[in-house]
Image (cartoon, rainbow, N blue to C red; front, side, top):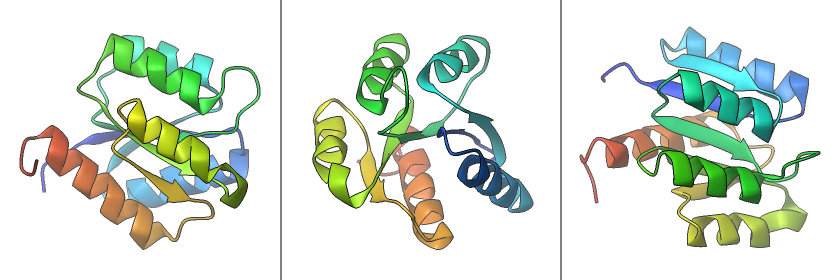
Amino acid sequence: MDEFKVLIVDDEDDFRETIVKRLKSRKIVAEGAEDGKKALELINDNVFDVIVLDVKMPGMDGIETLRRIKAKNPQIEVIMLTGHASVDFGIKGMQLGAFDYVMKPAPLHDLLDKIRQAYDKKKGLVS
């Protein structure tokens, strides 16, 4: 598989840092951002292929962050992270251009599968 870059955006430090560490252990280039504002700053200075974006965050929520990401770079594939009570937000995210959504807490292999599918879509390997 090609090397690709993933950004994990979540205000839960333990979750974000664990996922970044696990992706790196699988030779995936990964960074973390604690909120939407930081994510947008990182997107300005870096190229990411896939973003995993929590819906519920303080300040700018995931839906608004998604809108701004897609306005800046519509080619980035975004996977929304939702809790059971926020599935509707995940669906709304898909209506706004997100690749898919994953329920928290997502098993790592499910999240990795979604990240790979999103990357394949970005590279034009699947429609």
